[in-house]
Image (tube, rainbow over all chains, first blue to last red; front, side, top):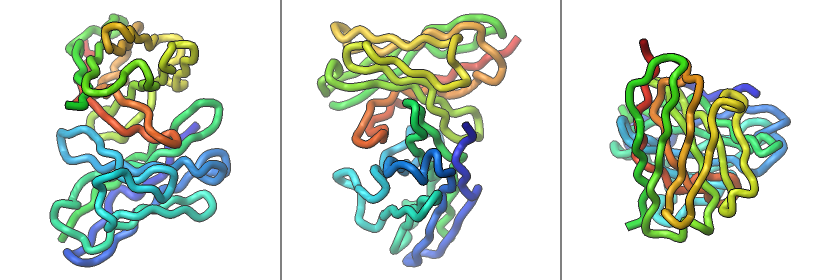
Amino acid sequence: QSALTQPPSASGSPGQSVTISCTGTNSDVGSYNYVSWYQQYPGKAPKLMIYEVTKRPSGVPDRFSGSKSGNTASLTVSGLQAEDEADYHCSSYAGNNNLLFGGGTKLTVL
Amino acid sequence: EVQLVESGGGLVQPGGSLRLSCAASGFTFSGCSMNWVRQAPGRGLEWLSVISPDSNYIYYGDSVKGRFTISRDNAKNSLYLQMNSLRAEDTAVYYCVRDGSGWSRDLWGQGTLVTVSP
């Protein structure tokens, strides 16, 4: 199975909102509400930001939100802050005990 | 402190073997499914394998099936990855990762670098 598709880059100015997409197929994103999003700073380990499409772990700011429509999931960061500049990765359960990740999106705060 | 600490990475020749270890602390390791995930330089994340708390269920991604073996020792709060027949494309940072809700991965180690090169 192929990796999920994310745009290589996204950007926005402080205070703005930016949305990052994650496109799969009807065998993964489209079939299961098991989409997660991870934030990763350079040289650091990923951090879980969103799970089960829309849920936020304790401690994650409510500026981060997730959604899904059909085979595409999205992460929206509202009220952009300089500290949000990082790589963001999506993942989805793909059936048969298999987990797929996207290629990652570099978010730049202008 | 809740943490995962990987070790065992390094330089290995193509065709060689390496065993990675992960030491868990600060949580009930024996109650958690555990994973290995890797990230090649400048690339995205790739899920490799998961093992259930009692080791009864083990699954692998297609790219490592038959070459890599995941295992755990709950008495030592440790997770392992035996990697055989290594190839250049296995060069990556390898992360030890705890299962979260809904197929998420909620706790990550700092990673250990494996370089496969002559």
